[in-house]
Amino acid sequence: MANLADEYGTDVEIYIKALTTTIHADTPTGAPAKLHDLLEQVGLERHEYPTDRPLYIWHTVPEHLGADEQKRVATRAIPALLLAGYEVNCTPDVFDEAAYRQAVHEARTRAARPSTQHPPPAGSPSHPAPAQRTP
Image (tube, rainbow, N blue to C red; front, side):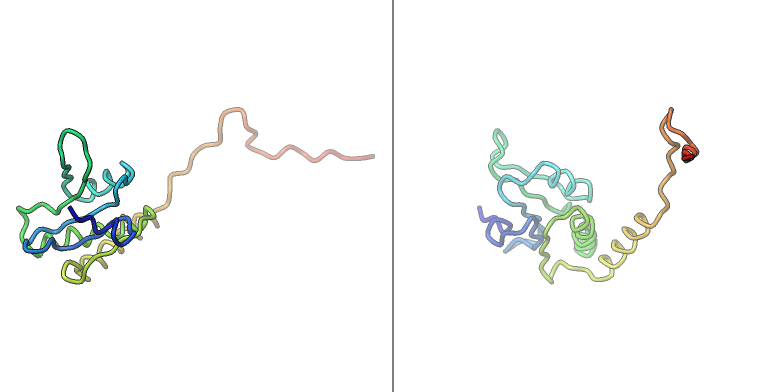
């Protein structure tokens, strides 16, 4: 089985598998579990072969979705992958510019939200200690 992520040296290769309409996301051999988990979190389905000992792991966009929605799901995964520090390549026949822009906008909005302020740890002074005077 060909693995485009291994071939091109990327973390994720998103493309339409030849002679099918299935959108694949290949990861390199031995990719970390957190990468596979992230791909599942953004809506892709995980597959393994053989099933008794994973030698080859890949992800696909759910096939029950229409073609345009499949492209949107695949494209919307890209900003999350990039923000997590992964190198991603997506073929032009999958990439949906509007879905990408929306996903980037949503990621920026989440990042811009003010974080909750945490109270100082117990026992730490809330006021600076007074400076000592020298005679």
